[in-house]
Image 1 (cartoon, rainbow, N blue to C red):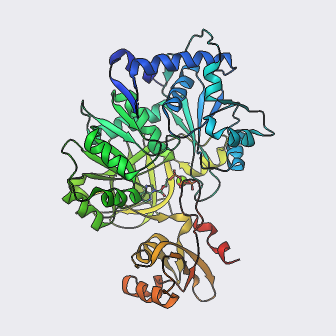
Image 2: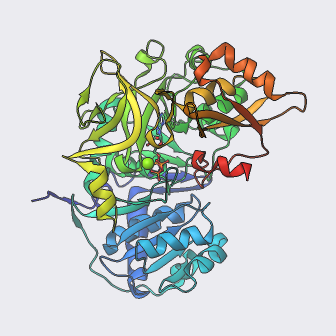
Image 3: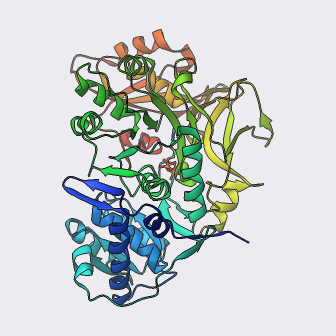
Length: 490
Ligand code: ATP
Ligand code: MG
């Protein structure tokens, strides 16, 4: 039987009622205040027809109201479907249908998108304001959950295909928070800054840690390098979560001033941090923790500590305490010692499957291991290196080519702002790599870029053609859609 636990916020409000839970601008709420607001709102939600077991969507930019909504839905016993605000109405509509959402709660700034998305569906749309105006109904709120209960549904970014709804249970969130604290430790003065979206697991997982640890979070609506540096220097922030591209923006804005000694962790996901940036961080006393994770692992599952970051450049680290990671060959055999294969993961933070998708669940979770679709290798000491997505692998004359490696070489050219690489059918080689680049100069030609690649890459990896384009296709999470690159040629 799955273990039962008190609802995290309820318990937290009993333990440390007067600690600050969230601060955003001038607004601050203690855990007790957050609990009371969530409880009151749960009554209003019930009055508006929301019930235990329903799937209820939230479409909102980061805000305190959104956080209260997220917690209130737990007191109702509903399952929260976290929706990406950058999705188009038809993409939101797909997720509403797929998850059989009954009510959609939205910030008033997104009411039009919400209404368009819900058109023709049996979904009732409520703005946060309208809900707050509802009379409160007295309810018997949910106080206890089972760790196996689904808490949130979060769709994958849809980089390799249509997004899939990931079931994240209370237990997945609990163990993710515990795994993180066993690695990073926990301090009484910890304060984690959220400037990544709450609808993404990178943001939501910080909210979960906040109630589980009793830790203050400072919330920003979105990433702004100047404001983040200011919060680190002046507002007592000790930990931030960022993606790789944000690190160089923070350094550019920083003007060479070291971070305060109280700042203890910059958690960086989404891809390896280049060595020049790591060295600069080290000179400014910025402890960088690189990490690998996905929606299916409820946040980080593999993390590299700063003490290893300069010796293990490019590595994402080792699996967190409750979790395991392994490399598997095509024949489903474990690979060792730098041999590449699919990254497979296991642990109590890993999802039990996709919502309403038994087929995708069966394909992905086999013998208890979740097959990530990413290729990587592990060195002799057990450090993981992520190479690329399996679906984007280019096989040319029998050699495996990883587009990410070529893209990294391309962006080292001074005129290349962004690059995307994919395979093109070829009679001789099967496939050959071709590149799509966005450049910041009219003077650069295909032959210059190819010459640049020849100095950085083995010849078989050098793109056979370089196409100059205005933009690269990206999804709502701003991830490159390599599968759509060739259609730029149509
Ligand atoms: P979909 O599953 O729908 O194709 P997605 O995989 O992009 O979308 P997410 O769950 O948001 O959706 O992203 C997780 C993926 O991000 C990982 O599987 C991996 O490919 C990539 N990723 C995360 N961290 C790293 C890292 N440190 N290095 C390289 N890639 C990473
Ligand atoms: Mg994925």
